[in-house]
Length: 300
Image (cartoon, rainbow, N blue to C red; front, side, top):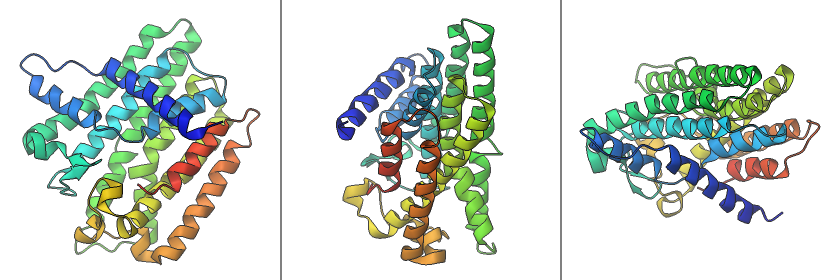
């Protein structure tokens, strides 16, 4: 298997799905639709829809409803990036090598573009019911929607974002438990959603779904720690966004708490455990295993 070639091919397929579901920028709301499309079209690794599709393949594949959820989870991820970049949060001017949405469209339009993508994500996911052919399909889609709502909400990503913002306040006393909660929710929750939704839509049993939630949790935490490492050791040219933003925003990260060496060791341990879980199922997906390793040990 030529991993890089497969990755380009599969990422291209995700891009086609996103283009298929993105609304046309027209009507009186055309400006916000244009901003939504601008943010989504910025590119990126398309990690979450890729992992959703590959996890579904690990359990024999899912039906046509899968594409609705692949698009939906990337729309949710993109909305979170729009809001993260806002002056009230991280105040970043560049994302993936180009100007962020609020720089191009203004802070007001960027806010509602994020809102629009979040709402449109669920409109897109709900279209999966139109592709259901049997009662079992409806039940799987319902289960997938419950996962998406919870992992993207106050008991998932938004909860992690809240804890992250509170932790930045001067009076906050941030512990390792707080930091782990932030990583598990702000970053890992959507990865957990991607992998467990893929498994649910493919008909995996509860035990397998629980194992994948653990696996994805490890991947998400390792991914965030690696992101923190790159914020210290990377360059703007390679990353496509400013480095040192954590220090600029006085953020406590795993690196500032434990140092680069211990952070790298933790990434290694979490990665090994995640891949071991993937290898424990009856069917193997070598591409997915390699994807996990590549994403965790990335340089950008």
